[in-house]
Length: 352
Ligand code: NAD
Image (cartoon, rainbow, N blue to C red; front, side, top):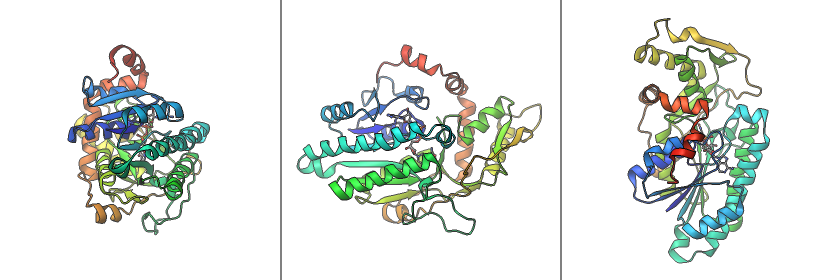
C-alpha cells in the first residue's frame, strides 16, 4: 500500500487514478478536502476496495501516526498543498500552515514510522515529495532552463512555502537518513483541473461567453506538461530515483500565456463553434499579478537519462485531450463551480 496525501486535488487524483489503472497495489488517500479537493474526481473508484479515502489534515500529527501505524504503507507520495499563487498573495497564512508546517508534521510522522520498521520493509520505504519548478524563481529569455543544481530563488508566498518544504525534506534525509526523493515539475494541465488556473479558466469562461482575462502583456512563459505525464514521472522516480536526489520533470514545452489562450480558443472554435464569433474576441488584458515571474523552463535531462522517462503527450495532443475532456464533462465543471460537490460528498460518497 502507498499513502497519497492530497489525492482529491488535481494532480493527486490523476495520480491515484493512473496508479490504480496500472497496479493492484492499494492506495490510502488522505485529503483535507479544502476548496481544491474534490471527491467527484475519484467517482470512478466507488466500490474499488484498492482505494481507501480518509478526510484529514496533514498537520494532524496524531492522525498521521495512527494512519501510518495501522496501514503500514511502503511509501508516502506527498501532494497535499495550497497550490494557487494568486491565493498565496492574498492570504499567505494557509500556505505556511499546510505547505511548511504540514510537510514538517508529515516528515516527523514518517520518520517515526520508518524508524519502527525493520529489514526489507525499512529499506524499501520511500517519502516522495512532490514540488514545483517555481522554487527556482524566474528566468530571463536567454537563460538555460532550470536544472536540479539551480539556486532556489522563490518569488511568491506559494513558491517560498514550497521551497521551504523542499528544504525540510532534504534536511530530514541528510540529518535523519529518511529515504526521500523530490520531484520539481513544470505547470500541469489536464482533466480535473480546478477552473481557477489558466487553462481550465479559459475553457470554462469561453464556453460561458465570459471575458478571458490575460495578465499584463500575456508574454509570461511557462513550461507545460500533461498531468498524466507528471504522474508517470513520479512513478518512475518513486520506483528508481536515487535517495536524497531531486528530479526535474518537464515536457520541453515553453509557451507564452497568450499563446496558450489563443490555442484554447482555436480548439474551441473547431470543437464547439460559437455562432457569436471566434472565442478570441473574449480575450481581455488585466493588470499583471504583483511579482509575476516572467519565465519558467525545465531541463528534464536527469530523469530522462537516469530513469528513461519521457512524456507520452506532445503539447498539441495533450491540450486537445484536455479541451475535449472539459467539453465532455459539463457536470463536473458545474459541480465545481457551484461547490455542490460537498453536498454530493455527503449523499453519494461511501468512504471508498
Ligand atoms: P490542488 O490544489 O489541486 O490539490 C491540493 C490537494 O491538497 C487538495 O485536494 C486539497 O484538499 C489538499 N490539501 C490542502 N491542504 C491540505 C492539508 N492541510 N491536509 C491534507 N490535504 C490538504 O493542487 P495540485 O495542482 O494538484 O498540486 C499538487 C501538488 O503538486 C502540490 O504540492 C503542488 O505544489 C505540486 N505541483 C503542482 C503543479 C501544477 O501545475 N498544478 C506543478 C508542479 C507541482
